[in-house]
Image 1 (cartoon, rainbow, N blue to C red):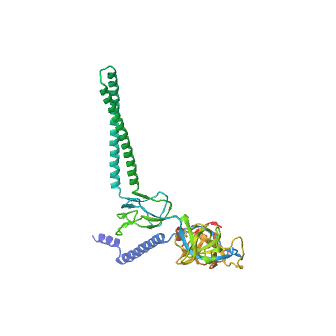
Image 2 (image 1 turned 180 degrees about the vertical axis):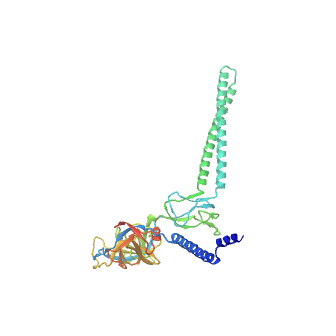
Image 3 (image 1 turned 60 degrees about the vertical axis):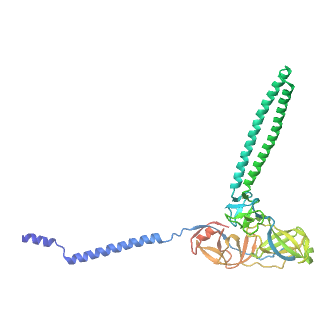
Length: 417
């Protein structure tokens, strides 16, 4: 018995050894687990900065030169107007059922702008079609009766020749055929009227669909579903007179009022430089279309129409514009103007928070740089401050690309111009 107790005592683990060993193991497991969790967190939370492919260009030093242009003989101001502008309405009075447009939407000619409630027009059309079918049925009936009358007349004539029928019987048969033939003519006219009535009602049903009369941009949405609309102004002010206002952007031109004292300086086809009030550094080539042959006695001015020679989405109706009429057949030059700074593609410049910026590529990374702009020259733009010649910049900027170009982001140049 004592021997067994001694053996068990030898196998027992001392409490001090258990405490030390267990503590060390717990610390090791806890530390290892913390390292694993830290590694996982670092792997998942660390942003993946994959290089963004970009087109690049090198800023070139602007060469000094002379800016030449035709001499200005007259300055005036006016507004951008559209020669083709329409308030689109319906041909009939009705309740608006659906509208398929919003302001700013470009539509092609014939585009469905809105639909009116067509329940009455559809019912009238179905009624007219039924009347047309009835008229055709009566017409077919009379044609059959005419065949019967012709047979009866033929038999009566044979009988009359054989003295088996009287002359009165023959006359009666002849007159019965004539009456049916006259009835046939009347029914044919009624059938034609019914067909025409169907066509009219089909057109009225089509008139419940309001379509664009020409291609253009919707600049005003004037009605909502559920409203009454009419081609004429209705009393009470509860009826709209149009669905929308449509403008053909290709018909934009400039209208200016020129004083009578200087109208002799303006000629048809004369070259003009136009500058929008919104883009004062953008010179738009234009030319005189026509001088309206009448004067405004109240303002002592003559209206002049001017055509844009370049189309651009930035030109909008009713914008203010300044124009300079250029002297014809002469090209005097302005004083020498040295251009400073660098020249870059216009697509390399963007506006953020009213600041002009470019994205400079250096060491495979992109950096935001504020710049000060100069004049525009064709597809290029002069930068007078903020960028040095020889620096590489990102071109072809758009919203999707700008969203990826954060400060210090890695990029890969796929083209250098």
